[in-house]
Length: 162
Image (cartoon, rainbow, N blue to C red; front, side, top):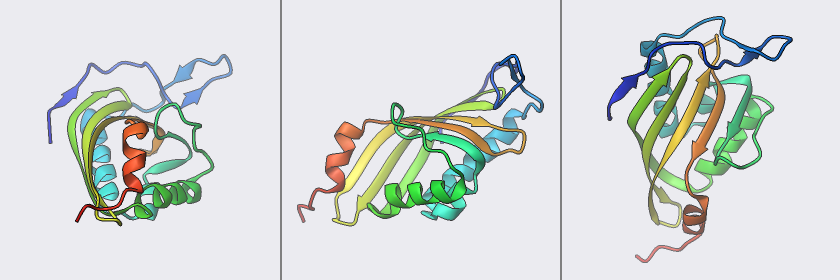
């Protein structure tokens, strides 16, 4: 894993708004706690278990994967189905390793490298970045992932050269 860079703690975003629309933070997570939550998240990804992956999210969370697509909402059952469609239906194995982690207040940005083998025996390696926001219950409330689907999607249906 790469470098963990905690950034000064200040109020800058949260998942709650008051009536005026101002975003409030009611509980500031410590950088060590956010690091633990991120580590747990990536363990769940590597475990290829949609239910465990979805359990890392708040029921009211929003998932934008990749960034620019319509956010996925609706709770853990829908998140689990999303994971199954995105991961289990395409990959027989995967590994994703955090590279650099930047933490500020209840948010983190994580760069990573993904390596997987599809059911057609095609090896896929690519890099990306995920932006996490955590709520007061230590769950992911906002999740935005940057990667290039234009390059990756054709590989998911490609046949192996073996």
